[in-house]
Image (cartoon, rainbow, N blue to C red; front, side):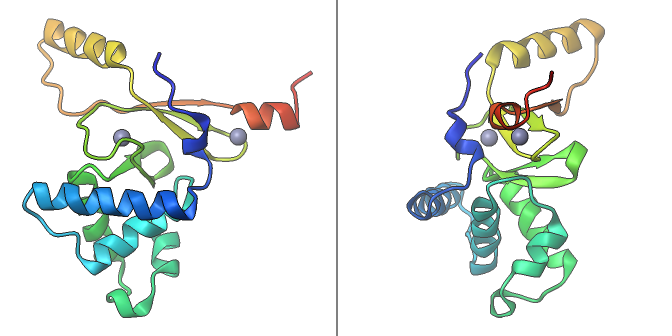
Length: 163
Ligand SMILES: [Zn+2]
Ligand SMILES: [Zn+2]
């Protein structure tokens, strides 16, 4: 299993956020699309939150000057960011996280802490391949892999160990 460093689950530091935004900008340019001011602002908020964040929470934090404060605006921006591999959607939480490996196409799995709500993104090629193989065997036309694990992160375990 390829574990992403635990730091990725914690709040991104300012410089990390700036770097991630630059990478996202370059990534969009390479894909021939534009990271508009609004899309950039939404991505920045997702990066800042450091944990899975819902669309309405984002809407509340969005500066009025970046765009119309309407849910549809946020969803459009989020869909763009998802399509261009900057953000992932955590289905079971109906929330969004910044990708830890911007621009690298991958199937992700998420470990979601039920205590603190943190979600750690991992990329395990073997899991993704095994599921693709199984789908092919069953004649199942796979469109997306959604793998979300629930449990407790190491920091929550150390705060309150189960007896
Ligand atoms: Zn990712
Ligand atoms: Zn936790």
